[in-house]
Length: 265
Image (cartoon, rainbow, N blue to C red; front, side, top):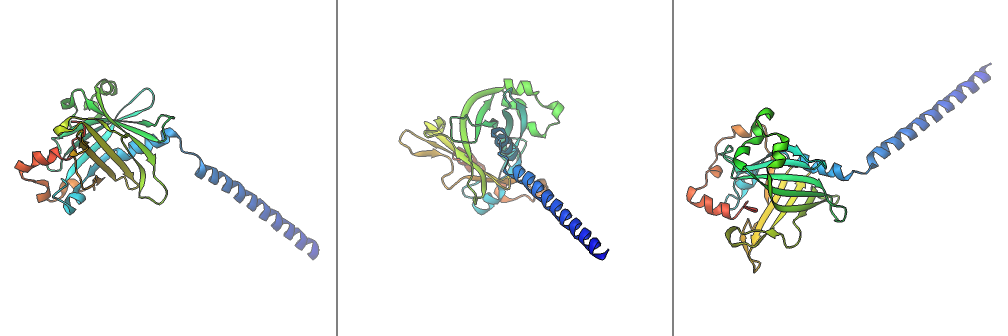
């Protein structure tokens, strides 16, 4: 009897082990499929739109290099969705000390790149038909904002388009890209064309670099030292002590604005 019992016990153990191995194998296969499931073109567009959204500040960069960078706040939020699924975001930028008075207002349209281009996401910038009506759009209750159909109707002049690609493994960024060679027409401060670069980092940090050039290729506006670095604003950003960085001399402010952050004015 002892031998039969031991044989039965051993057989059950082997069977149980086989079942467990099978379950592990099946589970591993399912997990592998989930992990290796290809990200669709629209998935990339959604990731970029989500990363662009929110409040971001250039405060740390302005602290490191106040001679070339302002402490600027960038606030972006969803505004509408086009029939084809493209996301429309509202963007405004303002000096940290005057967030209710944006000096730049734009619409972003985010969608997958056309299949004939070697990129993943297309981010286009548009002027707003009546920008005054959109001031502080993101801070308003939804029932006090223009309706999505009104937003779509207020999309005005196309200003620029950036083509983003997924970053290679090991880099800090998720996506990076620029305007096509030759940029887009621009007449600000003697420019004839402008270029723009955009990088989206893994921590939702955004780097933007806008520059204008004349017919001879001389840079006539935009920061020369490198891109603006916008980091997600901490929850306590509104309670931060006032800093001299936020109060540049008024007589130099306008001049410095001309040399930075004026893409397609």
